[in-house]
Length: 234
Image (cartoon, rainbow, N blue to C red; front, side):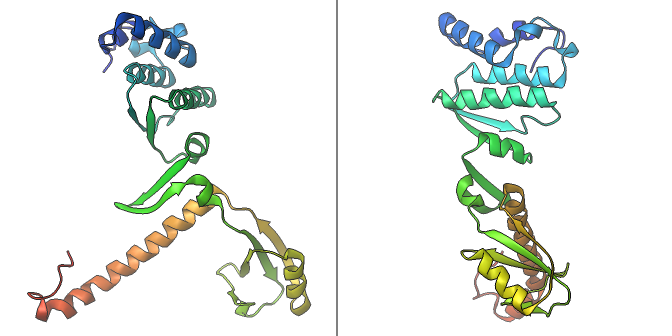
C-alpha cells in the first residue's frame, strides 16, 4: 500500500527485490508504457484514480510475476486511462512472462484483453473456453407478423409477439416461405454479440437455479422416510 504522503517514485523501489540493473530496466518499461513520469514524484493523496491505478499496476508487474490477478482494473476510469491500462495489460501478457487473470463486469475489457473466458454463477462454471467459440452462434431472423399464430415453422411466438429463427443457410428462402403464408409487418437480422450471448447464458442459469430451489423442498420431503440409506444431497 502506498504511503499517501509519498510519491510513487519513493514507494516502488521499496516494493521490489529485483537486482538493481533489472529493476531499472523494468521501471523504465512501465514508466514508458503507463506514462508515469508526469506524476512519478506527486504525493499519492494528490493523484487521480487513474493515476493511482497505473501506479499500482507498475508496482505489481515490476516483480515480473508469472501470474497476475486483476480485479476490475478499469472501473471508474475515463476513456484515456482505460485505454492506457488495457494497452499495458496486453503488452505485459505479450512479453510472455505473465499470465493475466481478469475479473470484470466490463465486457469491453473482456473483448479487448481476453482470449479465454470463464463464466461463473453462484460458484458454478457455466462456460469455460475461447471467446470466439462463445460468440460463434448462428445469426437470427426476427419476424413480427400482422396477425400470427402461436407457432410458425416450429418457432413459438415470444412475449413481445416476435418469432426468432436461427439462420443456418437459405435466408431468402426462409423469408419467402414465411411471407407466403403470413403478412410480415417487420423483420430484422440479429448478429451474435458477446453481451447478448452472455446474457442468455446467465438468464438460462437463473431459470435453472430457480427451478431447482422450487423443487428442493418437495424432494427433501419425499426422501425423508429413507434418509438414512439415501444419497447425500447437501
